[in-house]
Image 1: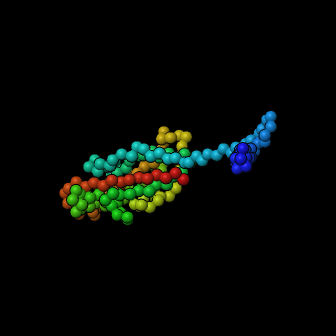
Image 2: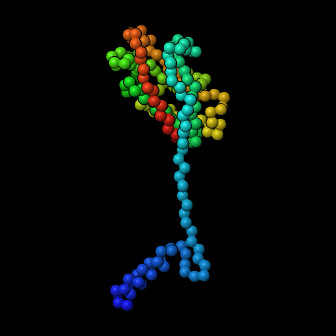
Image 3: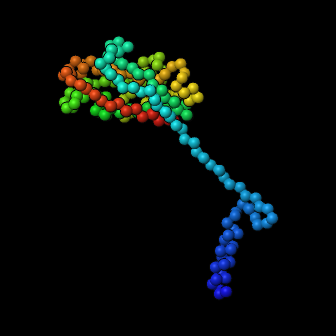
Length: 172
């Protein structure tokens, strides 16, 4: 065996022995390992339905609502909304040619009892809470309110108007 091969063998062999830092060579050996896992909070949004403003509002006037379900494994969440045809400051429905529009506003109530908080496009909401273990079967549900701006509705030409309202829910 050459000196180089012997040195290589010793270097490899000593590295293999030293690799077990928590144990020692013998008839028995003890070692320990750290086990780690990060469970991230999750959130689920469901029961958000399309708003058909041709149907009469059950709340009267120019306000429609939809009861939704939001559950968060952390018990808390925030909402950010976007209007596909709106601006960074307003929700907006537009006609097919995008020449006319009707503004609307969105409020969110975590309990379907209150009138809710005003949501603005692209702006993160306040922190809301949910009872994860009860899911969506608890007594009150979060509620989304959609209010049509009367002046832009009155000024709108006869046409079909649409928008896509996107809700993004973030667990806290």
